[in-house]
Image 1 (cartoon, rainbow, N blue to C red):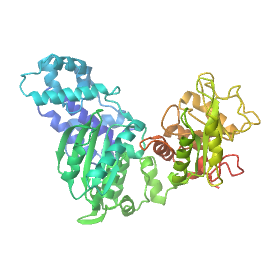
Image 2 (cartoon, helix red, strand yellow):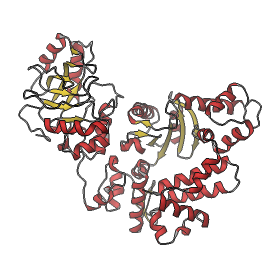
Image 3 (tube, rainbow, N blue to C red):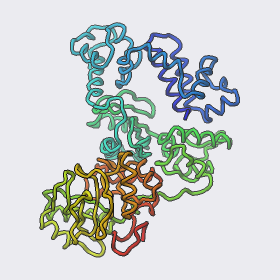
Length: 546
């Protein structure tokens, strides 16, 4: 579906391509149009419907024609033709951080460089040495950017959120410890819980912006400072990820958090709603004329617009604004709702000490039960069992307030769980990719784990989970459900099993990202099997909290 954000991105790309082709004035015109479109408080289609596109700054006859083509077809022929005039490798050069279109043109026209690999060869051969505008410092920066680009196997692609999570948490810790930052939040698609992120946006409040910038740029993850000025600093990390740090006033923190969390389409709807009410909303706050109405908290911002607060995970312009106008939204599942964990692993060489640590972590998280995998069939199909000392220690530490249940994990094949297993976890293996055709009468299946992420397998596995009365695991990692899969499970009336991350490392994304995926799917506590106060098969209700 055409959107203001996508249209602005296309016009920005047209400007870059025109720069590569050596055009003198057109790039600025398309960039101006892109900025105007991105800042609109109303949908482009609505403006076009009133024949008022020419009222948008920077939109003349030629650009209006292209906007109408985009609204009608979803693409722009002129953009397609420009891409055909430039070698694909030169376009790829634009993805290298810090390397703009005019520099890409110089490489192409003056040096015959038509891609990242050829640029690396030119650097290695010293072909940039002595070239006007490429001093030793500039050449070193280009080399570092190319190396960072190549180091990322998915250069130019979005990073899985589970890979970005430990990076983001390390940056947040660094800022909190050294920058005297009062509030620190990661915004953008990361906060919305999207499966991938293109970059990171971090917001802080601080009375010393320069100190925040100095601390941030000195963090070991940072390779290069690309921009610093006013209240914003942009850096490139050693893994090629770009991060924007913004320092905002406390009175504007909530408004900035709404603005930079997005999504762009969600923000467009908010700005349109504000305009209809005679208000203006941006990253600084909500105003009526010169009067400031809100900005300190997100709740204040939404309230000033007559809306209930919208959880960040569902800010995707999919009806959430309309629902928030009608009243409070359903309360999505959150960390305190998770009363236990159905699926916890200990290392294969674990001993009683690891059991003690796990129990302490569970108590710290106020959990009531853990399903600890002690025996079963591994992903290859071979039987395994944890040492007797571990099983004994689990029994010793299990209490009415924290039940440490021994559970079996298998693939639903011929090997059946023994009678001492509190419940069974079923997941695909190399030998059995498809779900079992039926459940055996004595099976007590609580969870379908590590799948089904593949849509081709999803229908069969979800049907099996439904028939067995089992939940399906959601979260990052191999073959767990992402937010789209969790949404399919809810539509199929299958409960979710949300990992708590109990006993994992501080930066392990399993718990936090699994919870975000569930929330992004719109899950409420009653949609989550381990929101029940009692473990499975204890006489408590299988659905929701007891």
